[in-house]
Image 1 (cartoon, rainbow over the protein chains, first blue to last red):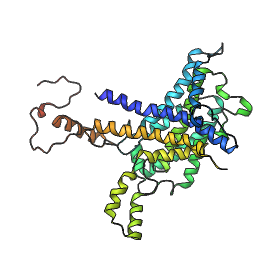
Image 2: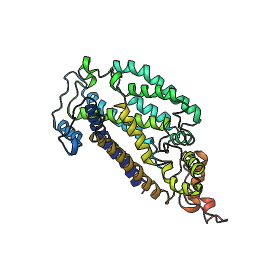
Image 3: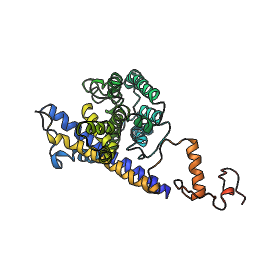
Image 4: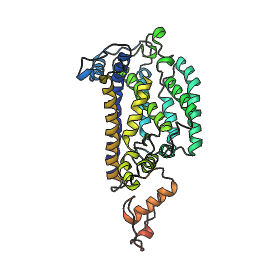
Length: 286
Length: 86
C-alpha cells in the first residue's frame, strides 16, 4: 500500500512538472515575441499553446546522429543524467506545510547538490559555475544561519512574520543574478553563446537526446525559480502576511478578528501561492 | 503595447500544474496519514514516538488515551537485527 502511495506521489509531482516545463518554453517564446513586437507561435492549438508538443513530436521522430569518435554511452547518458537530476530537485519542494514528497531534514543541502550536478560540465560552463555557484551557496548559507535549520519547510515557516525578501533584499538581488547565471540565461549564456558557438554543447545532439537537454534546461529554470520563492518570498505562504492583514482590517474597520481568521485561514498557506510566485519569477527570468 | 493576454496563458497553465501537484499531494498525504495533516521536520525522537504509536495503535498517526498498553506491547519491541522470540 505504501509503495503504491509513493508511486502516486511521484507521478503527481513529475507529470505536472514536465507539463509545466513544456509550457515554460511556450511562455518564453510568447513573452519574447511580445517584447520584440512579433506574434510568436500561434498556429498549433489555441493561441499556439500546443507548439511545445509539436516540437517535441518532431524531434522524437527525427533520426539521431552521433559523432563517430564520441563515446556513445556517455554521449547518450549525459542528457539523461542532466534531466534526471534537474527533476530530482522537485522531490523536496514543499507545496504546503504538510504537502511534500520527501521532507528531508537536510533538504537545502540536497537541493544544492542536485542543482550542481544538473549543470553540464564543459570548460566554459565550469568557469561560470566557479564564479556564480559559490555566491549562490553563500547566500543560502546566510539563510540557513538565520533559520538555524536545513529543512526547507522550516525555512518557509520562519518567514511567517516577514519574508526574507525585506531584510535580505541585497542578498536577493545577488541570488537572483546568480541563479540567472546558474541556468545559463541571456546575459550569462557563456556555455551556449549563440553568436559565437552556434548552439554550444547542444551542437552535436539531435532528436530525443536534444529533447532531454532542452527539458532539463527548462526544468532547472522552474526549479531555481521555486528555490528563489522558497528562500525569499515565503514559498507557499501568503504574499501579504495574514496576521498583519487581520490586524489592519480590525483596527481600520473594526471587523471581528475571529471571522477574519476563518476567512483567511485558507489563504495563509496554499500551493497556489507558491505557483503565483514561481510564475512571476519565471516571467522576470524571461 | 505591453504583454498581450495570450502570452500570459502559459503562465496560467503553469500555475494550474502547480495546483494539480499541490492539491493532488494534499489528498494523497491525507489518505496516507489517516485523514490528518502529514508531520514535517521529524527528528529521531519523533520517529521513535511514531514507531511506539504504531506498536500501540497499529498506525503511525494513531493515538490512544487508554492507560493500559495493548496485549503484546511489552514484547513487540522493534528489534531490527535479532529475530523475535515471543
